[in-house]
Length: 171
Image 1 (tube, rainbow, N blue to C red):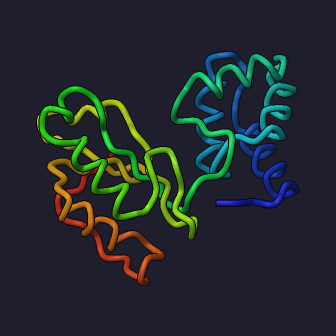
Image 2: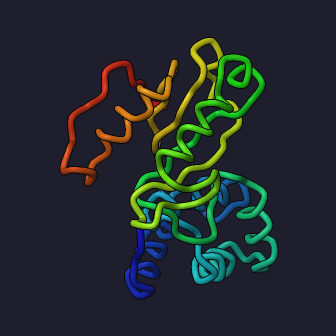
């Protein structure tokens, strides 16, 4: 996801207009910025810091502390593979190897066409149904390599397919 700087500034200004600037609202606002823009840019950090009367270093510290916040754009779809202990016990490493081979990128990278960003995640609270994958806000458990391939085929924008996948739940 990319956005032009003028539009990004307007989106952030709109979010700031709806958000109190007390410290406890900083992280929720940064998550909203990422949801709207796709990442938290240096411009966003500067704009948010000014509104919250914080230094850019303080806001940058929050952005870099939380793994769900990104400083740069990634693919159209983010697929996270749970690599926590419970998922490791049921094959997430093998699933990660399959996913990397299928997409042609290692964990932490985006496909050349910018369609999918693949990364490790650590526990989505679905330990009884591992290996677990999170695609955007969707949590899918019991993912085998075949099921992973099926999930890939259902991503919007890939082969024009928009059909839902059975067994998914919202996070």
